[in-house]
Every structure is written in structure tokens, then in C-alpha cells.
Length: 194
Image 1 (tube, rainbow, N blue to C red):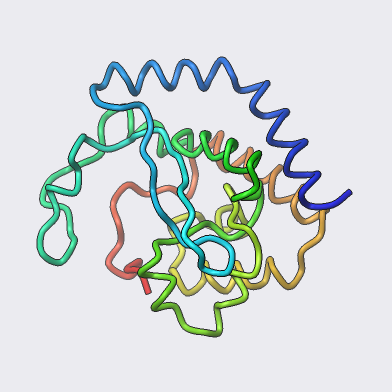
Image 2: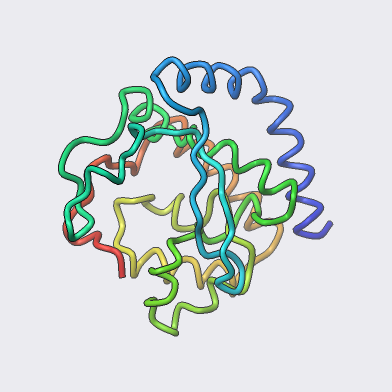
């Protein structure tokens, strides 16, 4: 079985199994005011821009509440959004990106294009594959590990890839997400992007 076949099979099964949850989340986000979905442009395979869908977890016009350095001047995450982020439910619409082939179930998480341009060349192997909804870094500490450690784990994933590794990461992701572990809503100063 190839990685692409694995992705299509897993994404199809998850979309069927999680359809009721997707509907509930969409209704919750909508009742919180504003659009249901948010599209983020990120660096995909070969650093090419891709548009990834997410359930909206921030207030409308969230970017208006950033200072000149890009730091938030107020809490921009909604109450529903806080819950969605803790359990990674905001990422579920990316299953559709897997179906169309711009993302994979497992792989390095897509990062902002400006960050991809500044990243040290030693981490370029992470861009040799499609970005994933989950990855080795996400089951090894999520956003509680440094960016350098995340990028090292991304490169390790690319070097050691196998379908068994994808399956293991997928199973570990289930545990991490259900427990809501490794997720911090407040960015730690040593977690600054590269």
C-alpha cells in the first residue's frame, strides 16, 4: 500500500466516522458568531503555498488585535475555539485537503510561508513531503517543545518514513488528542518561531 492510498483510505474512514462531530463543531462555531471556516496559507511540499482549512477558533478580525511586532494585544481565541484547539478539533477540515492531495494524514505540520523562507537549510528535508494533519513532533510534545526540536523530529520522520510509522503516529495521535496533552494556549517565550 502506498502512502497516498493510505491517506485516502484513512481520510475517507475518518470523514465518515466523524461526520456527526464535524456537524456539531460547525454549529458550535457558527453560534459563536462569524464564519465557520478559516483558511490559512502555509508552506506545503517544496515550500509551495497551500491553503489549509480549519474551523475558526479566533474572533473575527483577529489580526486587527496585533501590535507592530505581531503580538496579540488581547485574547483572540473564542471560548469554543479554546476547546477546539485543546482537542485539535479545529484541524478536522484538513481531512478534505488530504482527499484532494495537498496534505497527508501524517507528515510535518505546515508552517507559515515567512517561517519556511527563514528556516535553516538543515531542516529543508521536511519540505520534501506533503505536510500532515499530525506528525512525529505532534505526538512528541505538540507545542510544548521548541521549534528546533519540532523541525528535527520532522526531518527524522522524513528519513525513517514507513507505513508502520504512519500507523504508529496515527494511533499515538488518538491518545494525545483524547487526553488533550501537550497543548498550551499561551506561547512560551522560548517557543518563538525560527
